[in-house]
Amino acid sequence: MVYLTRKAEFSASHYYHNPDFTPEENRAIFGKCNNPNGHGHNYTLEVTVKGEVDPRSGFVVDLKQLKEVMHREVLDAMDHRFLNKEVPEFFTQIPTTENLAIAIWQRLQTKLQKASLHRIRVYEAPDLFVDFYGEE
Amino acid sequence: MKAHLTRRYLFSASHRLHSAEMSADENLSTYGKCNNPHGHGHNYALEVTVSGPVDPSTGMVCNLVDLDGFVGREVLARYDLENLNMLQEFAQSVPTTENLCVEIFEILQRSFQKAHLDRVRLEETMMNSFEYTGGAESMR
Ligand SMILES: [Zn+2]
Image (cartoon, rainbow over all chains, first blue to last red; front, side):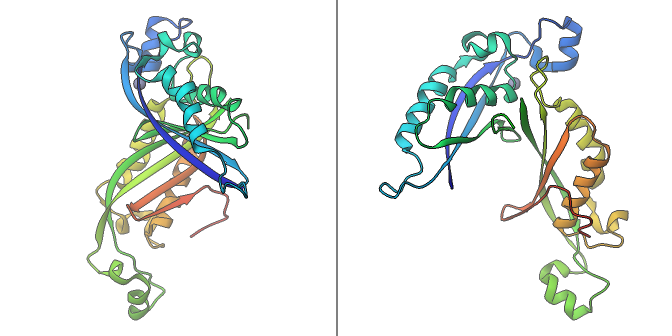
């Protein structure tokens, strides 16, 4: 088994708010991230796939195909977007880094050919990242 | 659904690597420059990884306010800008980055209740880092 990781960057804005909480609870739990006008991050995404090396091509995965899928499913949908308002997953879920990693996993999982998804890592900033490995 | 969250922190501290159980020559050959009696310092980068189910009401594994607060009080306040050799936990053991990594893991393991602790990773310089995930009886 060989693991291959491809990186991508995107920028998006978001805010954290749960309509079931009171305004005071929202502020207490989410702090500054509760500002309804949103704020932005430069996210770094690392997609790790695993598989056997194809003896003919020497590849675990066709990198060009992986890049295309990442662009289509993730970057086109999220880059330079307001996640709460423009990405359907976040109409109902809070766009935390945790939920972002899960949403990206779900978007990519069924779209990959040959290699299988091993890990989604999303950096919200250089000092914070989340790893998601699917259902554990 | 279970996710793993990693937060990175910086602190600076000094240490001297010297074992009372070794002769002066042995200390020098084992620790090299790090055996210099006056000590030397590093800018450490600490990564703490916690995991757990993502709470649907907050979207979080663990509120960063809680994690940052705990690490700030119990780890950074204890080690930042200190001489590690002067601290009680290194009275009997050598303050290598291995031992410091284990020590920090144990502080979190003992008292941080808000999420499961997966791993502590400690970078001593850009060139070397250490990880501890618990489990060993005693690494000291
Ligand atoms: Zn944010």
